[in-house]
Image 1 (cartoon, each protein chain N blue to C red):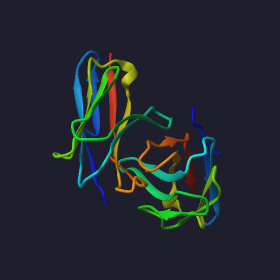
Image 2 (tube, rainbow over the protein chains, first blue to last red):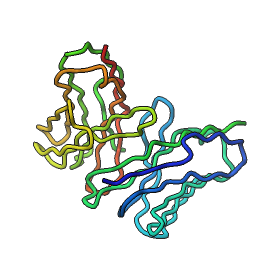
Image 3 (spheres, rainbow over the protein chains, first blue to last red):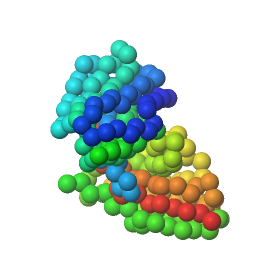
Length: 111
Length: 112
């Protein structure tokens, strides 16, 4: 079974600062996913990373994947309050039918 | 846009009751999933289904069953609700293996 660990679990950062959320996984995963969850709402897909070295960017968020290190990162650039949410990473089984989620990183951006 | 609809947003049930959580998706997706979300534990897979009448156990199937009689509908059944099943339940669907999941808004179930 794929184990996915995120850190930090909680992150409080000032507006305008940069920070990185880390996602380590235990065994080979063909794909790595990042989701966002706003308080009281459901999860929304942000990125799917398909191969080693993959990098995807959307606004102030950039995700990357290093399959050799079994590590994905979500980098936040010049944080703004609207980015406050919980971010989850997830890997998938070889069949693609099962997804294994990390425990999430609760991000609070302080003005 | 894909819409995954869960029938109840909040539900309060008594211990021992049989509980049905319903989920409907409108995009003809093959795969459907039930997760529960608990603080500090992230999302844990209960059951998933890759076709009508097909189901597979996830990581924590004990105390739950599922039904998928039609492609668009995936039901989660708590045969005899217990207090440790108090949780947020999330339904999700995807068009094919490996595609990102589309989640419903969740059902917060309290068992007293």
